[in-house]
Amino acid sequence: MAQLGFDRRRTNGPEESLPYLYDEDLPDKWSSGKPRKSRGPSDIRPIFLQPGLISQATGSAYIETERTKIACAVYGPRQSKNVAFHEKGRLNVEVKFAPYSCSVRRAPMRDAEDRSVAMAIHQALLSSVRLETFPKATIDIFITIIEEDGIEGCVAAGSIAASTALAHAGIEVFGLVVSCSAAVIGSEIWLDPTAEESKLSTGALVLSCMPALTNITSVWQTGGMTPSQVLSVRKRQSLEAHPEESTDDLSSALKRVKHDVMIYMLSWRRHFSKQRAKLEA
Image (cartoon, rainbow, N blue to C red):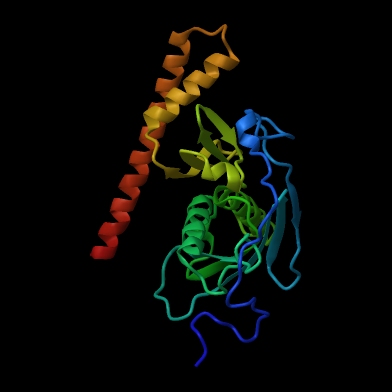
């Protein structure tokens, strides 16, 4: 009987393997205080974005940020079968990691990590698409992560690629969605963290927005940090970057940011409460 998760149609590796043994370990670059050689804490990785990668799809895009490589295909709008009539269309997002995308070979089946990344990208795109223009229709977005270098970077790059693919497909949107990730490492905030940097962070965040409308579409946070801890780190970093500014000015600015973030979180909580009430009814 075939083992569970073993695909005979693929070139599978050996069932038993041993790790490599090295004569000497490489020095830890984090101990030097300068983990990044080519960019600073406020710099992001170079981005290569190309629409029209998949000719069979309605719209497609390919994005590459150093070791993160993602392909996205959009199909639709097409009629939804066996679904009750609804005034607004539906947006489906499916994310799949290639078996060779990570340092450890992944199983071909979808897991919880695929669904969590798909949910984050779906939330980032949902408010940007004009779903009322195609009632009882569905837009399917299929994202394939070819190479992964940090889950936060995959969410940010996947959102950008999916928004570009929607525009390439000619689907009406309120604006293009751009995303960026950040991680708190020690007492500093690092933009666009890699997988190695994310492991050493105490908290990470992915922010998605529509620059044309200056609206935030999604905030995806992981880790064990409270908003007060994040604001204190940001305050310390701002004082180091701009020592000429007074503490009172920075405190008032951080209070306004905290107030805006809390209002945004409360609005989303009300939205989810209404959606849950509709489902329960």
